[in-house]
Image 1 (tube, rainbow, N blue to C red):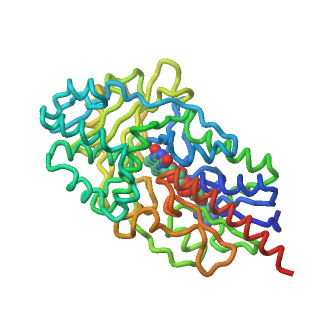
Image 2 (image 1 turned 60 degrees about the horizontal axis):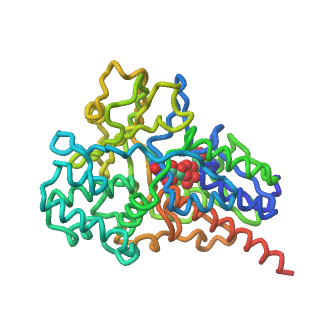
Image 3 (image 1 turned 90 degrees about the vertical axis):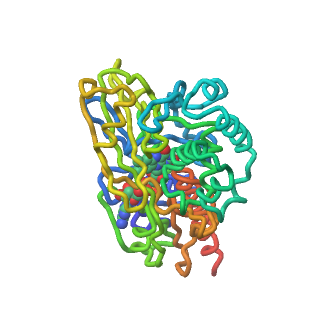
Length: 403
Ligand SMILES: Cc1cc2nc3c(=O)[nH]c(=O)nc-3n(C[C@H](O)[C@H](O)[C@H](O)COP(=O)(O)OP(=O)(O)OC[C@H]3O[C@@H](n4cnc5c(N)ncnc54)[C@H](O)[C@@H]3O)c2cc1C
């Protein structure tokens, strides 16, 4: 395997998916993962019988990731989030979230004229073509959409939730619209047992198809191989391995508080409107908590450079009816990168992201949430993984044709 045709550096979702496609095409492949544990940001930690992802994770049912996993015969099992009776927090008060016509009528979070405006905007949203908004920021798009302050604030909270990004002055509206369409369309799935099951299944495809996975095997140099796929996370890490000067871009980050609870919270899905915080019961899917118990994840969407504040997350948990006696364990992750480099309006949205093909490095390809013209979050990771694997395999066949 030292002489495998294709080497993959990085054993997160991206590297494993790329290796799975290569191995299934019949080529020899070896994955080099720096850590002992595979999975990167898609790992799931077990603590006292509770399982926590690296922050709240949801797979977009209508996105590329699920289609690409299906090509590898992986069907991630899980359930929809508990959004029935969702709540929103505005001005420190808790309201019914306007998630559908009934709750829109009943909620007191906005007045009658705002409700008419919101209903009309939500009806138009699914028909928008995200690509036509690629060079507009989320804020520019929202400014054009409505001058009703409360409606705008609600839409901004929904965009934040669907993109895991709190940078409306830079994020391309293409991404905002695309993610909201996915979230409100076919929705999302919380995965049974956590995202690490996906990691295990991808690793299983790699090894069952003859690929080799080496852990504790970090490398900052390109191996001498016919083709190399670099899937080490963000552009900074990728630049140091490939030697290509990828600009660092602007990352999206969150602070995360996971709470292991003795009982289900009174409110299982709570979104902050003027506070960029979200809480959801991630423990209700199979295999995430001991029977009869519950767990929630809270995320504070950080603006660039903003300091995380654990106290705000703890205070927000009280909106869900959680009191200190309910909490049996907690885990705080003060800064997690949800997106290594967001697709900005200034760089033209998704098509402005770097290609999987590394310029000036024949046979070297890159994978990540900041690569390629398709998708956001794990959708981008898996779309770029499949594209990189296909480009690397094509590269091998061109090498073979050279006498
Ligand atoms: C809080 C949070 C919430 C999220 N929520 C969602 C969500 O709801 N939906 C969604 O689709 N996505 C979500 N994501 C994003 C998703 O987790 C990531 O897009 C995905 O896991 C990234 O996979 P990756 O393989 O590109 O990178 P990573 O997971 O970062 O993996 C990179 C791997 O490369 C290894 N590595 C690095 N350098 C080297 C080296 N030199 N040599 C060898 N190995 C190396 C690392 O150890 C790591 O294992 C979320 C992320 C976070 C943090």
